[in-house]
Image (tube, rainbow, N blue to C red):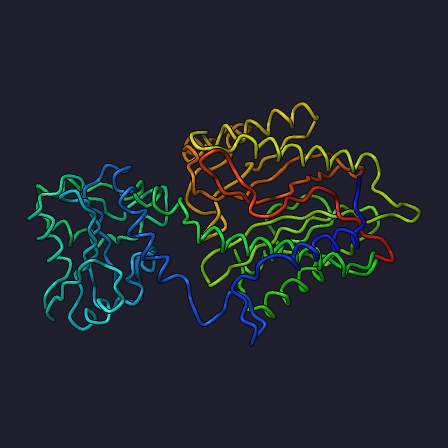
Length: 444
């Protein structure tokens, strides 16, 4: 059955009343902006617990990252060199049956870096000497066979080494070790795609707030008066009030769409009218680090309606069921393309028009994060990441699709988007998924 908006909001309020509060600064009323930033400690754990396995999975002996001021590596703050001034070199390697992290830092910054206790060892490099050269000498001394560097044609997060940095590194390594350089793409993929339980909990809170605020936004809608942009502005105010930022490009977050499909876009001044199906695609970032990506759908009742028309309700159920099929297919060892295919079967059975978007994508530090792509079964082009397998600790945002042609010939797509974490036995929703269309009437 369909839930009127007030009843749905009451259920949400009851849930929130008994939920455990997470990281709310009572003095400021802001979320995710307490005096305690969880990232430094989580970063240490990610390096110590996850990076050794990433190196093994990538079959590399050592991973080298070079950091510097003003044009730093994209992964600088993941490895602890976000404050680098003069060039510094960071090495991560498995050797002697143990994992090691070693930084060669200019003497002007080495003391402060060591105080952070991120790395096992920080070697101070005197002024006038090259930290990168010292790292190259160390690599030669231990005779590493596979040396991963941040150079990738497929992953921008693993492509931070500049041309001039590489030329200088090759000069320091010499011809023999130049031949051992490999891309860090697989290391970065294996490392960033897995999230620690503490990170998942932060994203769970981000998802909860995202969905809650979308429901509150729908409460503000006055059919025939409120515009898509008005709804977007309401959500922007919620973000400002609670001290959180955008999960993706600010001009396109949130995307509120009460008309035909527009894809990833900004919200327009279209007036929301009775009979409209409204989509809100919205995400927030907590602690300036972890993001959410959630969509919620509503229907605007026409005069005399107390429920959505049978056709609209049918489209909703079909889209919701497509998402459920994808969710049921999500488990360790399954490829991303197979998750997409599970939904594609349902879409075909339900008579959905073609949908060009992938079923889902990894989400974490950015909305479209590193990890398997849940797509490829319905398109001519298959991303390499669609053939990657899901692993426990990966977090995804994924859609339940059903698309149809409107009377004016334009297309409309239900794409209710949820978030889930992969567990050892399957998948688990971060928050309760949307089960029913939200109904908006003249009197709300």
